[in-house]
Length: 98
Image (tube, one colour):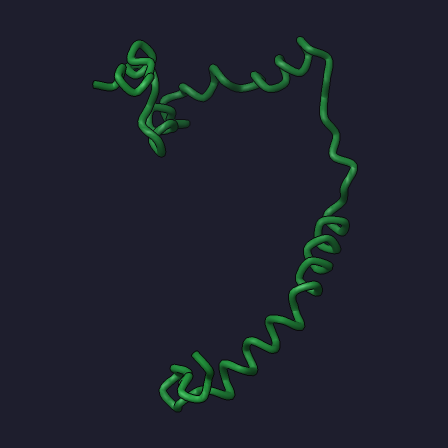
């Protein structure tokens, strides 16, 4: 049935179900030792190491700038919602055109 949809059934026994990739890897049993330094070894093999030139301040400023673009619309929507509050935290839309 799976081959009818183009799925490679040969790889299925070797892949974990989504969300359970790390179930068989525990730090208590020492299995993680096989992977220690693996990233460093890969970097040493290809000679490329990515260095992010951005600072935490850059990321914070980026996020703040994007929130500022939306802030006027968010404030207007919130104030409209509160204006239409019927007292039970649900807005009434009786006076809005259809």
